[in-house]
Image 1 (tube, rainbow, N blue to C red):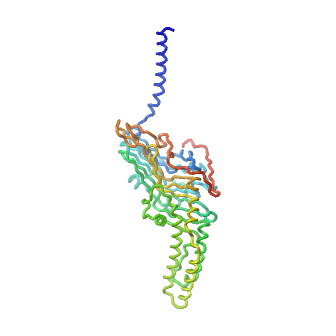
Image 2 (image 1 turned 30 degrees about the vertical axis):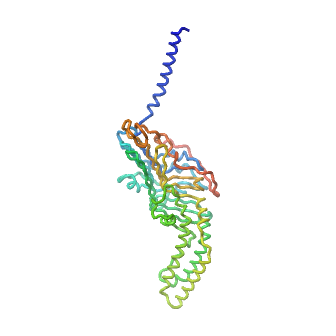
Image 3 (image 1 turned 60 degrees about the vertical axis):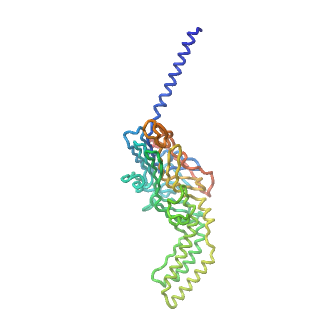
Length: 435
């Protein structure tokens, strides 16, 4: 072949190769949209047996994305699809994980996000009544119910059987919500609300310790109540103990829930709170009896005093409940971890409460009330950008709207540890075409 013909062939091959590169490069260039701001409110993120639940993640959250820095703000208000979540048929020991009579029941909750032209964004999920204080006055996400948590409550979490489990927990939560914000300058922050928490603790460990105390008080009150004007009620008669958020915080040694470090398990203080509450309730009954019989005279006074002395002596001979065995039973059953914060590839997520089932959430871990913002990048060309970096192109999606699973980096999978007879069965119908 002559040199000129060889050069012509090489030139043709080079031209074809260059054309192929240009054809391949064009679609990639077209997809590099300069995301200015983004946010997502997602009420439920779940991990089952240490594996993120794809069906749960596929449920629509509220995604807001401003791709160009013009035409905004872009707002998304998407209520949780309760029907689709229940159709996933997630169960723990034949009990539904979600919905009416389920382990987790939610009411009047929503998902909301807003992306703005200046590179700032906000996100919210949780009790709709908390939205104005967390993301702005006038913000009212569309609410929906998943179960019946009770009047005045946005969540009810029930784990264990009071009659047969070593420990059972029924936690009623007032307002539960989380928000995340990113400023135009790239500063990310989060906030959360857990306005009240009342936990009813039962099970065989508690009942075994409470029963003799309750019986002794019953004997005392059976003598005293007919002699006084206002009968005194035995607070331990049901064999269960109720503790409040204030009781848990007192056991933790703090005055306010915001004084707890991020990622604190409230149930780690439950055993101490229960022991303190039993002691306080017993002492309160004895004190009330002492006050009530102080005005008695004659035979009534003698009878009541003898009954009080006998009860005080009997209580002193009982073996008190200690925090150790109860604490081990609680740890093996569940966790309620508050104020969880994560950063993954520039995306900041605030989670109000993560419910763990089994040791360290090894059977199921459900993050309730999640808000994610960023990475954001102001639209100014070549500027310092926000959390997304330089030049107006997001370095990582971090949100479902940008093709990255929001569960990445959010929950830490624990080892596959067993817990009695509690098992998770995962079965779900074919994904609905509108999801």
